[in-house]
Image (tube, rainbow over all chains, first blue to last red; front, side, top):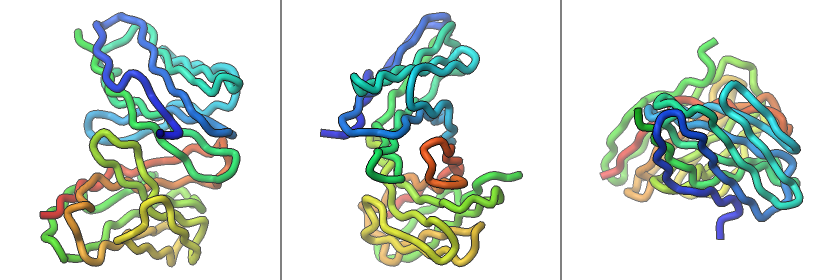
Length: 109
Length: 114
């Protein structure tokens, strides 16, 4: 079983919809990262968080340390949000990132 | 700043050939990483470096070698290419290994071994 599990694997939405992508992990962590991989392949960091909630524009990330769960929300989705969203955790026992398999999001106009 | 740059963008190799994937960063980052991304799989760490002259194995190091002679450069060497090494390779860097240090990724190299 993967230490980092994302759901759903694939998600199709209509423009304007509220989107939620989930990430569950089974190890102790010091931080959780959300990344976005563009259709062209480039990867950028969206959020790093260890507790609570962070917001950047239409994106909101939350984490519940007790439940070992994080969510990435996109409000008022737009076709340009179409990408793969990747969850990664930094374990308390090490310095490397462990990645989930990613969620492919497609937002249709 | 260019950030993290990788060359080449694409490459096709024959089984048994060798090649070096180049990675350069201009952010004066100490930490550099090589990942591979296979379809439907999460990024897997191949090798990483905590500074010039220091490298260490990641999860999937077999078939690869690295060196770090300067802060800026972290090349990845494939000595005897095998079809199992067909993948997209990403180089990344960060200032430190602190939990709150963002990793910056290069654009990737798509490698096919036939």
